[in-house]
Image 1 (cartoon, rainbow, N blue to C red):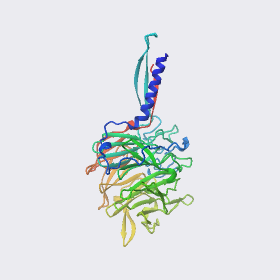
Image 2: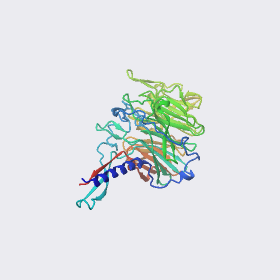
Image 3: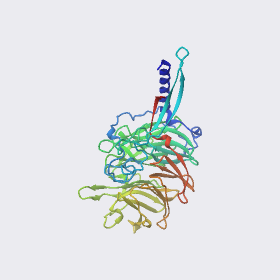
Image 4: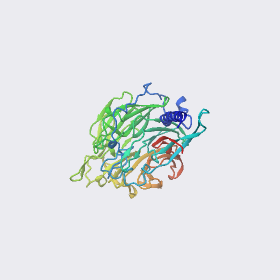
Length: 497
């Protein structure tokens, strides 16, 4: 190989390195909101620091601790590889466990693309020709869309971007998380911004600022460390940069759930310390101050923030693994000052629904709905108020869902995303306590849904490289956004034969 070919390879390698570094921040369309800020509810888009600094390299991760998928998992998908990535070691209903053969991030995914760069030798050398290829190999068929948020005319989406190891059980977070911005109405890609940490669980827009909560990689105990490799990032949309705003060191670990009171600017995070220990902390997103909210054992039963700013917390309590009895489970309400329990008595003999732990909460008008899961199946119940004492009523229309679901309020209406099997979305008639319609997705693991308008919504598909536009009238598919380009990948320089 002559010197010019070597020089060419070096140049291509450098160009590849530069393109790989900037790949996640490239745009397929200009984002006008960066100039006029019309895509956000408020005008303050810039971060408080001109030089955003990543602290995600403070501690190197071990291969063994990078897992978000574990053998024999039992809990819902709001637990490990959270979003929602907080599934635990012994949980079974996770949306990304080894038993789900339709997972889109398997080791056998080998699709790739390449382009050739032609070169010829100098006239001083024997006449010859050579070429090199830039080979892009996708390590996964999906970037794992974990959460959606809407502000103004912009759709925000965060992707976790991992692949499975050769054993098929362990998630390897090959790439840092990614934030993508789309035009809300039609899904046109506006911009992408790489995150500084891995495994994002949620994105929120607060007073014109964009925050992304990240869970990070797991440690050897299947929990998360209190370090700078996770936390809450703040995005500077103008500079297209992210910085670790509140670290896992300050929070106490990785974030599995994230909710925000838009009026006060305070965030609430469920911290995944280890299986069964998921406390809640309050974060002032302006001052970065952190305060523990005492009284919650395991907050993976769900978060819901109502219009008044009250935070509903599904406390899954604890399990006695010798007797298999559960205790301390409840729905707790935090009003910004005081934490109270919704139910006085949760004796399983009294309230059949609470024989199992809460797995989701939503409030529609005066009605509170609770999703109950026994790890393999689940039912949607509603809460009644009988003379000031709350109780759990029969399940909605006797429709059984899987143990891995998300209930969400969209435009004042209640929907159930069933993540198991081929996935489905159901609309609940709140007044009749019945299901209006149920629509299968024929694509496993719908993860989040947000409204576009009164007639349609976007649904993030976790195990498929797709964000799907659906009709809110019957759940049918209208169109979709292809997100495969954001999947974990590697880029190589190879010499053509």
